[in-house]
Image (tube, rainbow, N blue to C red; front, side):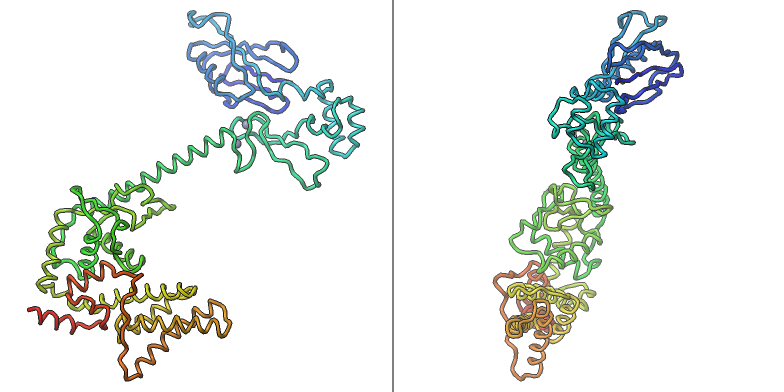
Amino acid sequence: MGGRLAFLPNGKYLEEQCFFGHAPRHQGNFVQGRSQAQAVPETSPGLSLAGPVFAQTRADILMMFQLCLSSPNCLETTTIGPRSMSDNLANMGYSVIFSYRSCPMSLGFHPAISHLSATEVGELVVAYNAGTSLDFLVQHFRINVVKNRLIKVLPPTRLDQNCVWCSASMVRDLPPRTRSISYRSRIRCSACSHVESEACVCHRCVTELRKQAADAKLLALVKIGNATTAEQIKCASTNFALNEISLYQAMALLALFRCVSVDDMGITTALAASPIPYAPTSSMEEEMLDFLRASALVAVSEKSPSGAIWVDGDSVLFDSQKVYWFINKNSIRKLIQEIEIAGFTGNWPDHWIPNVEIIWRDLGLFECRQFYDYCAAERNLRVQSYSAVNHMLEDMLRDFSVGQICRFIWYGAKDAADFLVRKKVDRVHASNYMVGACLRSAERSRTSTREQVPFTRNCYLPRSMVSHVLFDVILKIGEAGFYEPANMKIVMDRRYCDT
Ligand SMILES: [Zn+2]
Ligand SMILES: [Zn+2]
């Protein structure tokens, strides 16, 4: 066995692979100039040498050494002669000798079959694959192993593919006789420990995976940096006056500032640290914060804690509860003061007034949704269609307060749980039944002469900061926003009383 490596005058080298195809990883073009090859005889069975190779310059020599260091396992280091590196290389040829090493396969077959020629080994493998008796094979080929161990000494099948890491041939071990005919041994590299599998844990695969993870992390950081910086630049250059923002923006902005604290750089703390929830539901929270970001009133800060922002494909996503927010500190502080003064004095911008009932109902819808989810979850029912629930709640909010609707929802959930037990239906059916039960409860109320007493707030669903800001700070009607149906008259009466 063994191989031969020889340099050609054109600077490329010719290789002969060893029996198992072990080959240098780098092919060609590493020696430029007048390199020459000269064949030398094999020095010992199973180990071949190539060269001497004549290089013209020190750079050529160094490149050859470089090759030796980065070559696959089966390429041996080099001896150099006849002169030392300190000699003048300008006119003297240098011989560099390569040889195969450390690949056990290249040095010969397993010791138990080393007395066989390559042809005999081939015959042995063919006979083994054909199902010839193991006793016969051991005796006929004079192999000194127990017959059940014969599989261990047979060479693997060389495949027509190379290792992605060291370019050596990939091989497949012969299947044991005890396995079914469909059994396929794993494909592995004949030189390194690489296995053809995504779960390969060879050094190169592990290193490559780590490198890919590091690259992906770096790329993610760049994407996050680009996204947050663009948003912050826009935010830093935007100034708003009270007349330029809507009631919805004023409510969302003031609520945010009552939930977080702001440092000198204009970076806030995370909403998760606030003892009072920002909005009744996470969907409303995201909706409001997205609106503030789109208006450039706030931006996601690049100084957010790790894990709060991440990359998913081409999108940069963030957790609105965990990120820090960036604001144009001086401009926004002034705006916040103006909103608070407007709420205190009642001198709102005129364009806020038509939106009061709309925003009141909008907040009521999310508060009702929060209570609906709570009642359904308490009875182990899962909402099947939020569009049906939203439609029902929007309809109720035209006539009833949030507190009254909470009563309908509670009775609807109770009826649905009762229906589940009495009729022995599944939970999907009962969940759908709950929507109808709420509606029936509301319809009974509409036809009844008795006034429906609203529920008080559930102690497990604390009032959100948005509710505090809208009803206490801006509209100044307090919990009437929960106990009364949305009606501008209530707001105007209160403003009239105050003035
Ligand atoms: Zn390999
Ligand atoms: Zn591997």
